[in-house]
Length: 411
Ligand SMILES: [Mn+2]
Image (tube, rainbow, N blue to C red; front, side, top):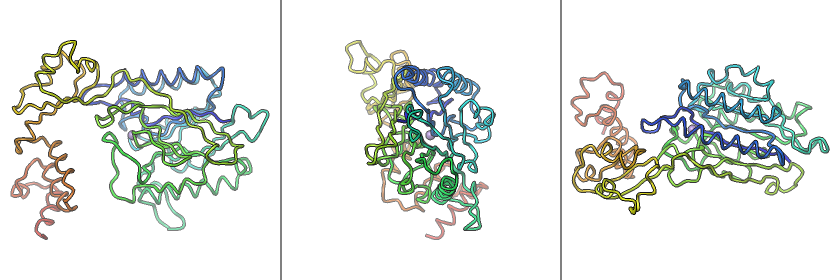
């Protein structure tokens, strides 16, 4: 039996509405370390799989690097044989993340940040391997593939969209797997950072545009297990294919979602694919929950211990005030009662059309399903240029304005 623990989309160093999450991130990573340590005596983990977006930005703050460094050291201290598999996501700088990769491999820490290395096999042996040499799987890793990052011999060109890039990587993996005598008799598993068609996204991901950027899950059929990153809500794509989701809620639309690490047991001896994989969710306790609350300003401002809102005192909050008049400086005034309030929405803004913030305008826009793509583009340009006045566009050198103008003239 192979025992794995899966996580991803750590986004270390993320700033959430101006608030640093270092303490929150350390708090959840400590829970992962504790799990690995607890499991060591009974059913040790054979590998930790981290599916990309280690950092939130390509140049992460030094604290974020320290957190990740400490995390790897702690895991390695618990069990030097524990394999740790890590890929770069679309938020990471692949080159920066790859520092020291060749040395770390000797310590069982396997980074894959270069697309050309997707065919390098990592053999993970299970807890019964000594008695049964079939208790092993062969992992491959596909980091986030930027446009043009792989060349297709067959098409004689660099590949542009996600679907083509992932197909190319998987074809290369299959060919290498079949031709290598050390791997060809083992089941293949995969760690990848991508967006599967039909999955559920959330506001905290950097989105791709266009259908060509989604991957069909059929492409994963030959793998015994596929660990995926990119989407922040945990989800099952198919029997053998799971997103663990991010360990913390990174947007208010993820409030009330239980965040988890995935505990995966793979029995390579079972015939039925459905009984080969057993997934258990390890619930994560956040340092501060992420909550959305709605009510009158006074109810928040004059809150007492009996108030329905009292229990949210130490949560990260987005508060929507339903008052008909605009409240001045609401965040500062509510901070005494709610020290972790991060965002406020005032319904009065919505009632006075003109004063909508750009974010609110966008929301109204998205609610309006009737906009065709050229109208959406015009709205986008108005938003980016912060003006509705098309005359003013004349005076800018913005390429967006020029395109928007020609779109308008065509109509
Ligand atoms: Mn992510």
